[in-house]
Image (cartoon, rainbow, N blue to C red; front, top):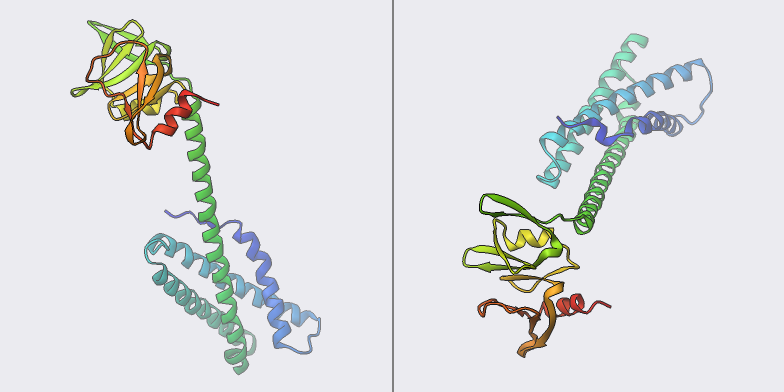
Length: 276
């Protein structure tokens, strides 16, 4: 269920705005306003009518947010909202005005009400709609900013959190290989192999992509699709043609391990290997 608190504090705002609108309407409608009990009574009635019409309009907008959201079809939503709030809102004003007129005077409302007053009230319905539309998109902007902040915080946390290592199996036992014990990760056939500082290899049930997200970017670098190396095993690099690099390690590896770094990743590797 769509929560109406999405638009709050609109209730507080309109509790103040509606009487001001009524006062402004009186200023436009009556050239000679006399402060007396009759004015107070009619002003109170008009303000209560305004509150009722606004509350109905608010309920329509909240209903449309759930049934016909802006993200579906913006133009369709706008047309339906503007027309429905105007027609139903004016209907509330018509009904309550006629009801009060028949109760108080025993006859229909003055003709001026259906010509001049209704025109002014219609304009105010457009203004109120504009306020709600503005509140809606402001709230959406706030939500977007919160989501961006949360994503940034999660990214920062992922980069700074302490990674304890990888649990590997050796026979019937499990062993924790800590980050400072890891030399490299290499894709061999269909598996990722972890090589530790004792030159022992272990099969991991992890992809290189998943491993890359866990390990420290300061201590490890992904050379290519096949290999991630630890800083402690990289002794240097040599330049190849077309701007490529090839990492040189301080321990022997099998000949088919790819240590080439692409031209696009070469600057990042140099910055990682030779930090300023």
